[in-house]
Image (cartoon, helix red, strand yellow):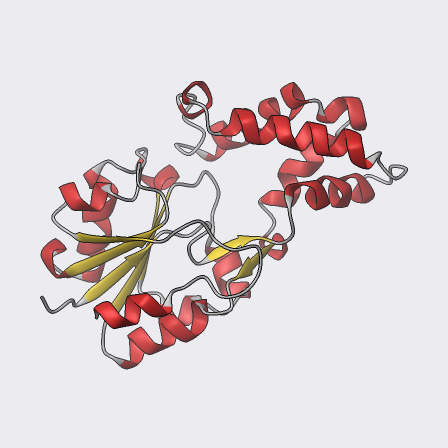
Amino acid sequence: MKFEAVLFDAGDTLIRLCGNGESLLHRAAATLGCDPLDPAEVAGVWQRVLDRSGTAEELAKGRDLSTTKHREVWISLYEAAGCESLAPGLSTGLYELTVDAASWEAFPDTVPTLAALRDRGLRVGIVSDTGFDLRPALDRLGLSPYVDAVVMSYEYGVCKPATKVFLAACDKLRVDPERTLMVGDNPLTDSGGVAAGMCVFLLPRPARTGPRGLEHVLSLV
């Protein structure tokens, strides 16, 4: 099959938050002017964030369906995990840090892969479950010149794996789904591209450092 376009998930596929969760908590505390936090307590709080964030209960709250809901749900989760016991206001500070464009980094092979796709004449889109605007981060990281369309769940009121967001991206790119490759890392959400008529390529979990493995995409197109 000859692909005419490639869609990418954003978080943990093309970009990710700089540093680990514990470092984010320390950075958020520093912006509040707090004394240094106890590393063991920070580790415990962040582990609770990780344990809760992917549960069915949390996902059912619709955090990626609107900017208001995104802020509300994440700050509430941080509070429940114990951020306020570390420092008053830390839950809000952590949230503001995570949605700041300066807090995101691209994988080393992201721009080279997108540039290679552009050189081969393929259109590129991003389909992301997110409750805040990723475009400032894409601009800052130099990805925007290689991206022809961005579809974010909060703008459409629906998340992956619903076919609506995948088909919306195809409409923006003016390409048929069967001529589109979807690249992501979450089999529960990104695989929705199959129901939309696309081929889907799923990446393994990213390594802590180094390239994401996006060169495999080029072998498929």
